[in-house]
Amino acid sequence: MLLLFWILLFVAGTCLILLMPALWGKQIYNTYRGTRRVNCPETHASVAVRFRALGAAFSGLSGKPKLRLADCSRWPVHADCGQECIPEAERSAPILVVRAGLPQKNRICHLPVWLAAAAAWVLGMAWHSEYLFRSAWMNAMNLDDHYTRVLAEMWTPHLLTVAACLLFAYAVGALVAWFGKRTLFHGIQIAVSLWLVVVAPIMVATRSDLTPQLMWIEGGFSLVGALLVGAIVGGVPRRVFVKDPE
Image (cartoon, rainbow, N blue to C red; front, side, top):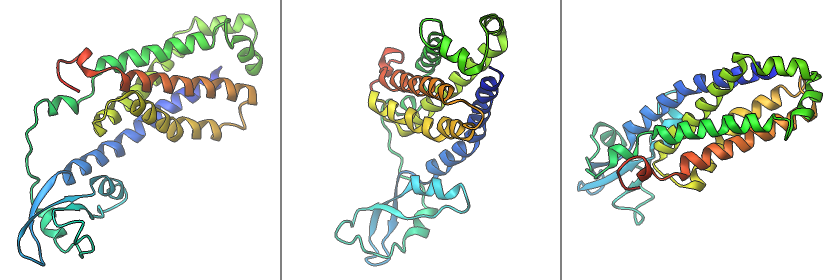
């Protein structure tokens, strides 16, 4: 059981560590997103260009962002140009586009995140209950019923699981808000991707300390919990909680 607590604490710490590069990547993404007006070096006429903001964000995590164009008003006919306008585009400010409800859409909707975290925690309680996998979990952990009940009455395990569920749900909510596409499938896709990046490597790294039975139990719970979080965060329409269109 203590090993499981350390795993949950490691998951929470990993989420916090990954939060800093994620925020830095988001800052780079916001810097280079949007359409800009520049003078084409070939025609000396005004054209509209757009950077590959996501690529700049990823490359900027390890050094100076590598800038390439994602689109130009002269494309696709002249898509083979040398992109000599990139320095001017980098100095130019993005064209401001005012859209109703845009500031609200890109914010995290907290209530679905809280509901998702609570649902994942309740799932964990049911998953490790006597009605599902408690017996198999106790055998895998080599614990008796008395010691299991003592652990269940402690506050620390519950606080750690709540923190892990809340951090994971907020990470999914932040990514959904970042990409600006709130759908059931997109929420599940982001949650599963985050599970593959954060939780699955931890399970693999600790496989020597865990029995195969415990790996299946905890791996299955974390994956089903991730699916549940993604479905709630991505699938619940914002208009249910916030009075703005999707």
